[in-house]
Image 1 (cartoon, rainbow, N blue to C red):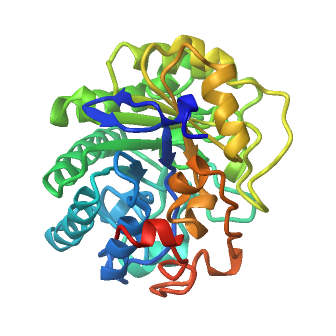
Image 2 (image 1 turned 180 degrees about the vertical axis):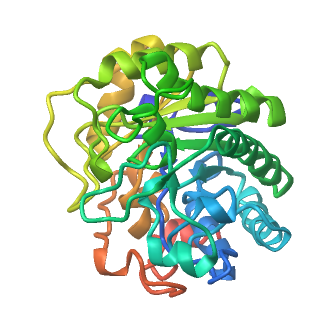
Length: 365
C-alpha cells in the first residue's frame, strides 16, 4: 500500500506530515492521582511515534482542576504536569513525529464523588443531569468567561510544554458539546436558546485559543451524530452547520470529525445512515476523520471518497495494540488484536507499553 495516497505528505497547520494516518485521542488513565503524566506515558507515545511524520493526538487533558471529575486523567494546568508533558513531547519529537494536546472539560459528565474529593462542584451549561446522575449547577456568565480563559491558558501551557498544537474536545457529550446541543443547554441568555447562541461558547474558546497560540496550532473535534452521554439533539445538522461555518473562518489547523458509525462502547462500530458530508463541504482546510477505520476503509477515505481534499485517517483502538500501526498498514501486515480489559488499568504498563513492534520497526528504535 506504499503507493497509496495514504502515504503521500500533507500539510496540516504548521506541520508537514509524511503520511495521512493519525492517532486519535484515547483516555487510558495512566496519570497520577494528582493528574500528572507518569513516566510510562512517554514510552507509550514514543512507541506510537515510531514512523516519522506521524501526528499523535494526546488523550483528553484537563484544562483546570475544576474541569475534571475522573481519576488518573492528566492535566495541563500545573508546573509539575507541564514538566511531565515536556518529557513526552520530547520523546515524540525525537522520533520525528508530532503531537497535539487535546484540551478537555467534563461538565455534567464529571463524577460527583471525584469532584467532591477534589474540592469542586459539578457544573454545566444548565442544571440538566444525566439519567440517574447528579444534577449539575448551571454555570454563571462569569464562570463561562473564566472557562474560556482557562482553555486559552491551558493552550499556552501546552505549547510551552512542547506540543505542536492543541485540539479542543468538542465531541462525545462533554462540556463543549453540552453547550452546543439543546439536550444539555437550556439557557436563555447569550449562551443558549438559539442555534447562534449555542455555538457561541465554542467559538469564544476557539478565538481565545487562536489569539493565545495561533490559528495554525489550534484544532477542533466534533461528533455531530454522536449520542454519547445522552447528548444528541433531535436535528443536529442546522446547529453543527452554523458552528462549522463560523469556525471555518478562523483558519484552524484542522477539523476532526467522528464518523457516525463509531460508538463509544463495544468495538466502536455502530450503524448509521447519517453522513458527515454536510460538515466536510463547509470546511475549507484539512480534515481528520475518525471512527471504526481499518486499512481498506482508510485508503478508500482518502483515495475514493474525498480524493480532492486533505483528509487524514484518524485511528484509535488499533493504535493501542499496534504501536507500529502506520508501518503495518503501509506493508499490508495483520493487526494485533487489542484487549479491552487493559484499556483503563490505572498506572499499569499492561496493555499499554507491552505490545511488541514488528521486527523491522524494532530494529530502528
